[in-house]
Image (cartoon, rainbow, N blue to C red; front, side, top):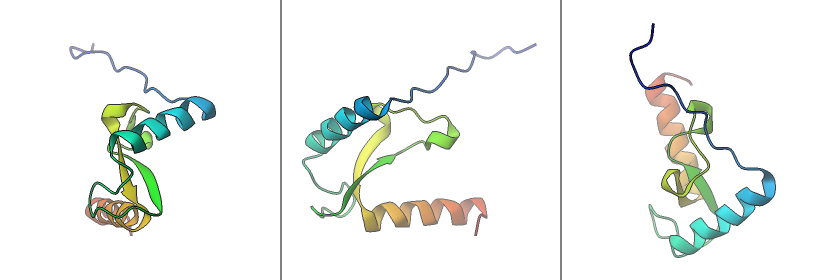
Length: 83
């Protein structure tokens, strides 16, 4: 018997919907990395990973350059003990 709130399925968009959302996030974040300010090699980062039920939604996405994106994922793997 579960006393908590039922788990909601994550929102995962189809390719075209994600492409549109990606553009919205780039626009919202001013087309620069939210960590270092770089304006090239931009990627969209899920704050809560898809593999951990992170949704494809504005609240869960930020713009990072490829270097910052890589370092965030490397740090989280290291913290989890996944080398």
